[in-house]
Image (cartoon, rainbow, N blue to C red; front, side):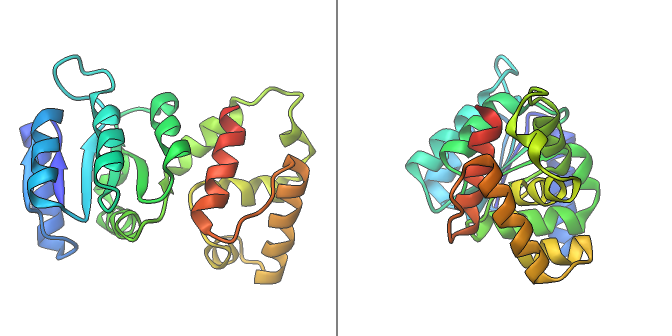
Length: 213
């Protein structure tokens, strides 16, 4: 894994946290997008952990670097970190390239278990979306949207789907049967006018594309 953040203190703290937990092996660190891209090209890690805001402008350099990594090195997963919920450009990248892409708030990195799970899933080619980001996306929809036709439980299922959760994971989270989850998923796609796909990341792509529209 490569860790990219302009803060040396945070960067080294992340490296120590991950290596002490035995979750991953860090093969490089970067303080800016240019260095990050060079390291990815040279070392081809499974995952790059990248801050959204990086030098020189501290705007969306991390997002643009993530997009370039996914285009040039599709086997490398990218997990973006952000101090605040910034849904625009990050979600745009995920909408285009959902598999092997994730977006977490930095608050989550304090929970090494949650961070490790996100890294593992992104490295396996799955999408990962922070629950708070999903909630923000849902809340931004107009009152007169198709989302209003969903029941409360269907909205719960949709939010977990957008996080990249499988039906089995949703079943465990909501304490309902797998068959019940399948029914809710079918209802969600029907009401939103979206055809469910076989692959988990494809259905996330459809959900996020709809939320962004």
